Length: 166
Image 1 (cartoon, rainbow, N blue to C red):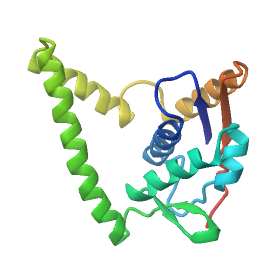
Image 2: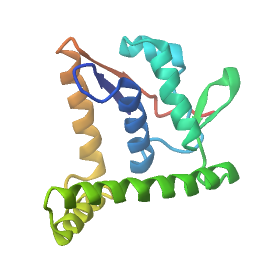
Image 3: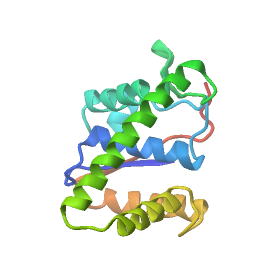
């Protein structure tokens, strides 16, 4: 899996890393027990401050996506772990709160309930791979996008080895 960051985006770098790792977990590119690169290694590969990567890993840990193993590093958490179940419950509440805020904002701009539900359903279908490119094509496109980002100077990419298991 390729991780890419773009300093020109409004989204903070640590959230770009976090969101890509969550997407990798959701699509199966990252599996439970798979080791993530060390903070120093990923920071070096991406050309960013190691505290930025550390913050991304800390957020992922707090959300239950990653387990920290001291000097052994970070690994993708197993959804069956008891700690992960508690984090999943908290994440569910947070997601519902965020959906509510999005619905309110959409309504405040004059949007209709049905149109919001259609947009939400389309994004859910996109996330679950019901519509659009198959997962393999999506991974290939992400790698190509990462390569494009490297050529711009403000963007960088790094790989998470598929064979890295804890």
